[in-house]
Image (cartoon, rainbow over all chains, first blue to last red; front, side, top):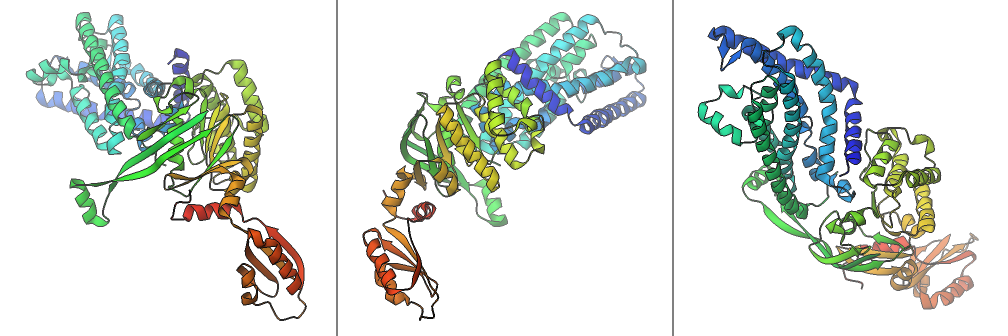
Amino acid sequence: MSPRLLWSIASVEARKRMSYRLDFWIHALVGLSVQLGVAYLITLALYRESGASSIAGFTLREMMAYYVLVVVIARVVTATEMDHSVSQDIYEGALSRYLLYPTSYPAVKYAQQIGAMAPALVQCVIFIAWMPFVLGVPAGISAGGIAMGAASVVVASLLQFMMILPIQAVSFWADNVWSLMVAYRIVSRILGGMMIPLALFPGWLRDALPWSPFPYLFAMPVDAVLGRVSALQWAQGTGIALAWCAALAVVTAVVWRRGDLQYTGVGQ
Amino acid sequence: MIEAEHLSKTFTVHKKDPGLLGSIRSLFRRERIDKHAVRDVSFRVDEGEIVGLVGANGAGKTTLVKMLAGIIHPTSGDAKVLGFRPWERSNELRRQIALIMGQKAQLWWDLPAEDCFLLLKEIYRIPDDRYRANLDYLAKVLELKDQLNIQIRRLSLGERMKMELIAALLHGPRVVYLDEPTIGLDLTAQRAIRDFILRYREEHHPAMILTSHYMEDIERLCKRIIIIREGEIVFDGGLQQVVEKYADHKVVTAHLHKNGQAPPQAADVAPLGQVDTCNDLMIKLRVPRGRVAEAAAELLKRYPVADLAIEEVDVGTIIESIQRAKASLT
C-alpha cells in the first residue's frame, strides 16, 4: 500500500470518528474519567491501608502517574479493539467490497486503525496536559524517555493489530468471536500491565512475561516515559515486540488463506 | 472477456433442529449438509455485451457473480476474466472490474459522496485528470452534481444507488457485474438507472452481467439471457429465442361487441386453443403457433368481434415458468 493511500484511508477514518461530537466528548470525558477515578481511589486506599510509602518501587505519586499514562496510552493502542470490525466484515459479508479493491485488506484495516487513533490522541493530550499540575512531574521523566515511549506506542499499536487480526479471522469458521475478543481483552490488560504494574506480579511471571507480547502493549510505553527502563532494555523489548509482529503476520497469513476458502460473502 | 468453464460451488451449512432441545443438541453435535449453489456452469461473455442472469431466489445467480468477481473461490471448475483467474485477485484485474450490489451499500455511510470517490481514486490510482473527467461525466449523466457533498446516509435510495454506480465506474472498468441494481427503487429511478446503463454500454463497451428480478430490466438491457435454476444453466441464448423455444403458442384475444346475443361458450371455442377467458366481453385463447390464422378467422366468423389482438406470450411469464419447472428443459 502506498503511503498516500494509507494516509487517505487513515484521514477518512479520523474524520469519520470525529464527526460525531457528542460521542467523542462522552467517550473522552466519561470513559477516561471513570477509568482514572477508579484507579485513583483504589491506589489511594491501597497506600493508606498498607501504610507503605512505596510499593514495588512505586511511590503514591509514581503509581498515580503510571495509571494516568497507562489509561491514556491504552486508549490510543486499543483505538479500534472494540469495533471488532474485521470479524464483522467477515460475518456481515462487508469483506466482499474490500476484496474487490486492488489493495491489501489487512493494510486497509491497519490504516483505519491509525485513523482511529487520531481522536484517541486528542483525548490523551487533553488528559495528560493536566498531569504535571496535579501530580507534578515524575522524577524519571526525560525527553529521551518520552521519545522511547512514543516509539513504543507505535510498535504497540502494530502489535495490538497483529494480535487481533488472527483472532477476528476465526469468524471465517465461527461467525461470532465476541467471547474470544473479550477473553483477549481481559488477558492482554492483565498481562500487559494495565490493571496493575507488572512489578507487582510474582517473580516467575515477571521473568516469563518479557518473552510474551503482552508487556509491550501497555507497560513498556509507560515504563519508557517514566524512565523505568534503560535504553538497552527498551531496545531488547522493542525487538521482541517486532519479532512477535512478524510471527503473528505469518500466523495471520496462514489463517487468512484457509479462512478465505470458507468465505461465502453472505450477510446483511 | 468473461469465460466460465464447469464452474461449481458447494457450501457446507449447519442444520439445527428447531426449539430449545435442538439448540442444546447443536452445542454438542451439528449436522452438516452440502448445498450446491452453482453446478457445472459454462458460458462466455464478450466485450460490449450485457447478459442477463435470471433465476429465482437461491438459484445461484449471486454466487456465480461473486465467483466471477473473485470474492469467493469455486469448489471446482475454472473461470477467466480478462485473462485472469478472478479469485487469485490480481490487482491488475481488480483495477478493471466492478461489482454493484443493489442490496449492499459499498460506500462509506458517514462520508459525503465526493470524499468516498476521492478515496476510491487513491485505491484505484486514478490519475487526477481522468478522475475529474470521469466524475464530471458520471455526475452529469446521472444528474447528481448537486448531491456530491452530501453524506451518503442522507441521500434517497435512488440517489444512493446512482452514487454506487459512480463509485463502481469511476475507474473505467472493462467488466461490470450488476447484481440487482434497481431493487427497491421507484419506477422513475429504475428507468433512470436502465437508461444510464444502456448509455454507458454504448459509450464504453464493457462486458456486463446483470442479475435482476425485474423483467423490465432484462427486457430493456439484455439481448441475451442465461436462466439459472438450482445452480444449473437451463437456457443460454437470445431473449427472442426463449419465446420461440418455450412458448409454442400465441395469445389470441378477441374483444366482443355487446349486442344482446347469448355469451360464447367455452366448450365451443375450446377446439381452437386453450381457453384463458370466455365471457360476453372477451375471448382469450392460447393457440398453437401453426393454427393462429385459422383460430383468428374462426373467431371473426362466429362472434361479433370489435377488436382482435395476436400477441407473443410475455417473456417474464415464460421465464417464470422455466424457473418453476421441475424437469430439465435443456
